[in-house]
Image (cartoon, rainbow, N blue to C red; front, side):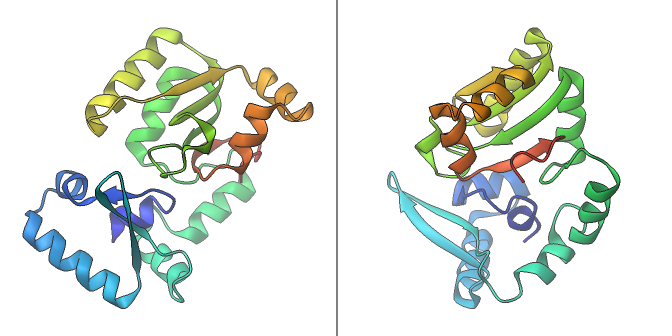
Length: 189
């Protein structure tokens, strides 16, 4: 449940879950069946793979997020209120990796991470980042996810300009299903 509640806008298939939580496939399938029957998660088939994600409409979604989410929901709200940087769905490891890139203003997953291909990319980052470190980050992400990652990087000023003129890419990104990793200016929250 921690995997699902720490990644509320992300879908996973069975083998991916078994790798991430290091459990046997039969026990994972059994627990997924139980969670589906209760309504805690939902499933959907895409490209001949059965994907599972947390059911955000489940009546106890908020309390379970408080218990199983990456940090409590209250702690995240307090941190967002104290700091202009809204860090939402990141693990400590991801935060360190993002920090190593440079001055990141916005970082988010979309595309194959959320099963919403409308944005045309899987990872977006805006800010003043080191291109070599970004390439290393993407390579590590591709290795961890065992798939090719389509990504876009731009300066934060470019992002602001594109949003202001209602650029097609920016509007599509704003409307796409996404998992926000970092948003210092609360554009995507």
